[in-house]
Length: 162
Length: 261
Image (cartoon, rainbow over all chains, first blue to last red; front, top):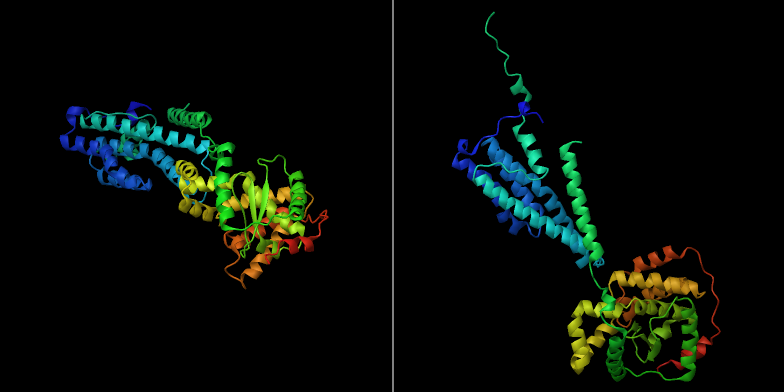
């Protein structure tokens, strides 16, 4: 990850208040979607995707936070969805309520808790105009958002006459 | 190593460790252990009182000894018995047999009327024994009522509520999964007791055919869902074992003795 291949990261005083709020919104939006997404965990994922596509053009800073919020939601949503379907099978199709399922519910609970805690930290940091990197998802988002596109590297095509 | 890959691995290992750890240390008690056998014994007393108030039972020594012969043979096919089984024959026009609490099994005279041989009755009994061994009745009631209310109702002995509960048990509305489990065990018992497990499907088929003619009386069939699937399932399990050591029982005499009139 050489710095040359990446665009420079904006500092807090270079980011205007509107951008900071949009970046914070990426994390907070999920609380609104959480209620609707409870019976169907896929709903908050859809909300995050929509939010990302609406805001990705605004600035790299907003785009980074929107993408990080979206990516970090994937595993939790997946875990929740599995928990819901597994639970429905137990309730309606009489599958046994096993210790494995109980252990899984703990995992889902812990994953959701971690996700909420980190999202809140992310929201606060974004509001201050700071970058904040989650494990894995932070780096992935940075690499995706800040990497220079190849056409930008070879931008010098037109030369003055010799 | 790629840092992203490393992080992904850390997350996966962390998640699996949580899952495995909480699975290993969970303290789910099996539902069937929520009611002790002693408690079930008390419930059985209340229940039997209720049943014998509603139905007249047949008390006859030679009937009992015939049932004992069948029961003894079946128990040779079972590894261990959870209960001291008691089989009661009740006078009723309903074709029904059901398992109640604490190893009490009830058969209605009309069901015996439908059987052609002692082996066929043994198949029905094997199915009921399987329900009892797996404690389906208790599990079912806990599911319907909740554990606390079950104990409360049973020990309170309110006659109206008891009547409702006995209805619930008599109609033996088990879930598909429980029925399948009972079939599975019944086949195992029958095979091990040197009886032809096909008797079970034969009896199912017969009831299914006659059900068309007499719709209301065939409780045992109507309360047992998905009969077609189950016949297929049992048949699939059987392979082609038809070996059988017949009972030394005068079946005609037994049927005479258990006639209502």
